[in-house]
Amino acid sequence: KYFLFVGVCCDELVLRTAIPSLFQAITQHAETNPETARIIKVNNLTPTDVKKLLSGISRNEEQLSNGDDFASFLYGKTDGNPLFLTLMLRTLLGSRFRRLSPGLESWEWDLDSIKKECFHGTPIDFITDKVNRQLAEGVREVLTISACIGSHFSLNAVAM
Image (cartoon, rainbow, N blue to C red):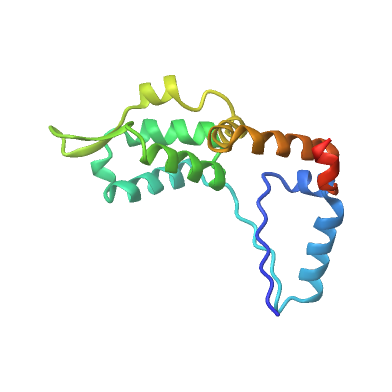
C-alpha cells in the first residue's frame, strides 16, 4: 500500500542520462499523483550553512576555535553536498582528529592532520575507499563483476 523511494544523485543530468527510464517513471508518477507523491530536491549547502552545522556539533559557535578554517576545508572538499558532508563528518567525529582544547575550553579540529591523512581525492574517492575497507574482498569482487555485466544478470553469470 505504501512505497517510499529515496534516491541520491549528485546531478540531475547524471540521473537523466544514466537511468532515463527510472527518472521518467518517478517524474511522471509525481506529476500524476501530486497528493501522494513528491520529489524533494535538496540543494547543496552554502559555506555559511557548513559553518552553522559545525557550530551545532560543538553546541556553540564560539566554542569551535578553528571553525572557519575547518568549514572552508569541508566546503572545498564537498562543494556543500549534504551526503558527502555527512559522510565526512561522521568519519571525523569518530576519529582522533577532534579534541577539547583545555586552555580555550573549546573544540579544535586537527586540520593539518586531516589534510595529510584524510580525504586526498574527491568525495567519490572517499566513499570508494570506505566501501573497500568495510567490505570483504569476495563481496567487492562480486560487486565489481556485477557492475560490469549490467543492471540485470543471473548468479550463474557472476559465478563464471
